[in-house]
Every structure is written in structure tokens, then in C-alpha cells.
Length: 118
Image (cartoon, rainbow, N blue to C red):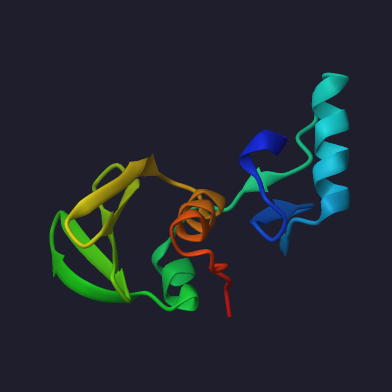
């Protein structure tokens, strides 16, 4: 995981506990990268159905192998490779994603609103 991929507030695992990233965490991660330390400080949170439900997404369509989740005008489709694609209306946004911080970043970039777990 790279510091450039994260923003303050993104959820990651630190010491096996899911937490929001702080400014201090980003600074520590950046220094860790600079000195090429081997141990991972943070690991990403995979997007799962339970994560999506906590974010407020609902199942919009479910017919194997496709499942579609919705939150307002946003649609998130899952596929058999356990990756997701984000759509606003009919337009795809970005590339396939697998991690919560990627979804949080895309959502924030499009809306200016934080996608925070409840």
C-alpha cells in the first residue's frame, strides 16, 4: 500500500484493526516507503457485501454472476473476480476496484462527500 493512494479518513487495517487513516499515519507510511522498510504498516480493506451495507448500499439487482449495489445515483457492480466497477448513471467511473479506500476516494472525487462506514 502506498501513501499516495490514501487520504485522511480512508479505512485500512493497522495491526489487524480497521481504522481511519490519520495525518500521522500518512507521514509514517511515507517515511516507511522512503527508507524501504519491508514490513507492511497498513493493509487495505477488501470491499465486501457487509462493508457495502454499512456504507448504505443496497442490492439493486442479483442474478449470477452479476450483482448490482446502489447508493443514490451510484451503482457498484460485482463480478466473479471479486472486483467492482462504479457507475454514475450509465457511465463507468475509473477502473475495476477491490479495496474500500479506492471506493472512498472515487466517491469523494465525484461528490465532495466522505463515504464513511456507520
